[in-house]
Image (tube, rainbow, N blue to C red; front, side, top):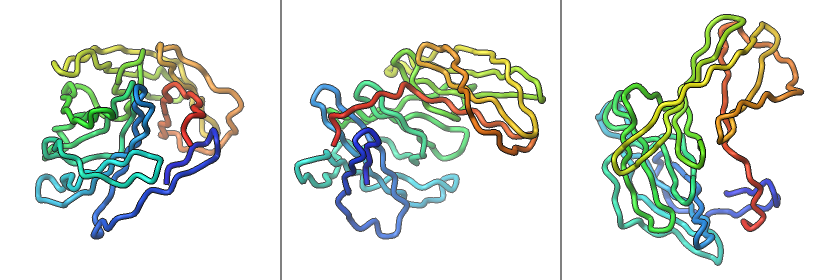
Length: 223
């Protein structure tokens, strides 16, 4: 099911037999044709590092009683993971090849339904996918101590065809205690915004909860 919190309406996706395999769904938007599409794939388990390879890739255009279509453009063999984001008509999701050390990002052009593999710098860790100045970015963060500085490494995609990224580092002063934590988000322009009014909750001292939210835009066209 796809649910729009702005309109509080939902669409139930057509069912098909997954034969008991793990199923992954990703939602993308084509701003040119104003189409929402759901990319679906299943994992077939192999002996390659314990990861399952994507198989039976299908796409569904939401609305007008459309049905699932098998995708003709087959991507390189990979294991899909749960990190995903759609930016300017391109859906990005985490992909793993053979072992943990070979992570990458797979892109899916929502309009043309074509796949491309984007290599991630070896020093980058796929902790979060987000948007920075309208571009794909990979985020990783590290903190230490009760009163500390949080270092956020942001790798921003410059050229997908050349697998070119640039690195930006942000330092944030945080405080963390046994009973509360400080919440913040980074905007697309890299500005930090602290979030007030978070209810105190008990957290272990070693907890490290850092999330990043890309620009949230209400869209009433969908559903």
